[in-house]
Amino acid sequence: MANIEILQTDITTLEVDAIVNAANISLLGGGGVDGAIHRAAGAELLTECKTLNGCETGQAKITAAYRLPAKHVIHTVGPIWGGGERNEAELLASCYRQSINLAEQNALNSMAFPAISCGVYGYPIDQACEIAIRTSMQSLHDCEHLDTVIFACFNEVIELALKKELGKHSL
Image 1 (cartoon, rainbow, N blue to C red):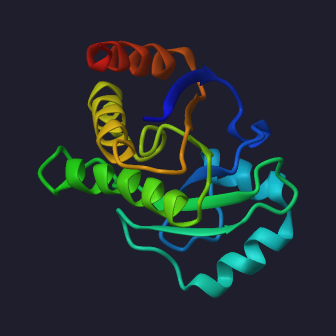
Image 2: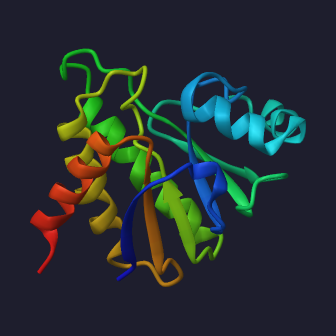
């Protein structure tokens, strides 16, 4: 199974096969990690994203990474937190599953995730981290290509929550 690393870092600086973008449904850029990825990748990313016709919540699409040190960007749309009564947990889990599946289908060896839906989408951090670790570990179990998954945290709160959750799943 893949090695899982948790780092407090800027996802746009990572030299991996793919970084995951916590995108909005338009895939045309926005705030937070989405805006940072689009700014770092350059206008070519926006041009390619315009050809994808958006992305549904819980789904994922892959593009080139252009000026980023990564080779690809996997765009996934996390759910907006609405109290947990609108299938948010399954949609968030689907983001991780679909992103890992795309990486595997494209024979990628390494990828990095941000904390999907934990910024302006308001997902409770502890719940989001539990879903991220559990779903990723389940999805990675049968992967042939992926050997490194990094969770790139934008702050210490998320880093500590992910490390706590990973510790629950370690042998």
